Length: 167
Length: 390
Image 1 (cartoon, helix red, strand yellow):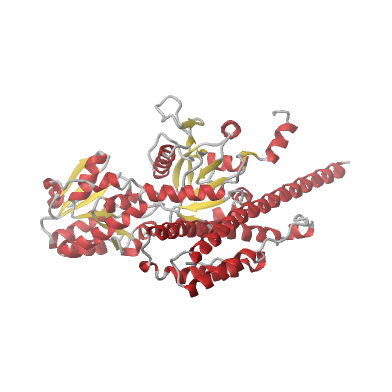
Image 2 (cartoon, rainbow over the protein chains, first blue to last red):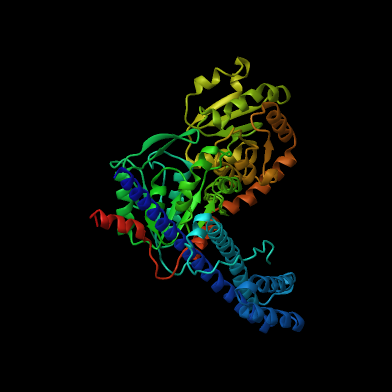
């Protein structure tokens, strides 16, 4: 009888621990989703601004071609290729911004200012997203989580390469 | 960029009654947010009767516990826990901002109880400690609920990564730089004067290091004067000074904010010889904003603020001879001193609330999900239902 109670207690604790862990992982997946949604919308806005810049009088035809191509590519890339596509866009924008002293028109300045603000936000959003992804991957690699398949059918989150030198 | 007005709940871990860096930071942050039209509530331990600003909600009286080598006045326990829970439940917040959520405090309780957009700010910079690593497995499930983490300095960030294996965005503490910019230089504080500000009786503020350097300095610069501003008992400190040098040391007592600006504008050098235990060198940012040339010990928090010596001179912490050498060199070289002060004054703008507040708010915006409010966690809800306390 004593043994029986002990086993039941152990089973209950194990059950509680598993359900707690599953809840914890679920929350992490949720965090990854929201941080990705935030980052994604910022990147979409950046691509839109890049297209605006490409159409404006700021850029020469060659730069404008490069910007348009990389912005379209970044928008249509799927999640695995996204970070490399966005890096290409960062590079193209960087090339354009390297000559920003020669840009004088007021309307162009507004566009560039918006781009600067967006870049700051993207940098923060990337670091938030990277943190939540690595944390989730770390937890999912633990034995208990793999053994009991606590992640269910949720796909393993994809890391976004942090381009520290982006623009 | 501040289009939508938010309901923001900030949790302060330390008692509101005692002054401190974290409390000041929270007060300024709350006032910055309120100034921008947001609704802010600060939950803090406080004695009920005293005059609190109307945005502060008291969670009860704090207790003193030894933690991390210092005495912290914090609050936790069953009663505090239910206060935190009802505050979150009734607050209808868009976002919670928890300060120092990794120490036993209201912030940890709030992090445990809440779900939704939550930000944590980590202030402490400590050496690697096994004790914190040991409690890691308990803290991790709690800390990982935070949507984003902010560290107030690079050293606070390293402390966080070393102990809890998680990364953070670095946003420094803020100052109102304008308050210090227009100080007038007063004749009685000019000359070969070096200034010290703070609670000088505490050894970790480093006044003994400075006083030990005094005999060496006075040999090279006989008209040196040490001006000490701050609350404390001056008699006791003077006993440690060579009687012949006692007339070189002046105590100004506790000074007002306006006097502080004048003080910083007047002294030739501002000295911060702190030996450790600082999470951030807010006083250095203020001194730079006030136009003083700064000399500080090379503890990590100070080296961060001074850009590793670019915006103020550093000396080897607790080494009086090294301090004396740095002071003598700078007092003899007016051009270098002016350059240092000018570089510092520009750099100080980086710590102004207009910049720091905007950066913090940007993190808020990234953490907030449309239509989602902060609520009690589902786990907690099922527990309370089970216990019939809903």
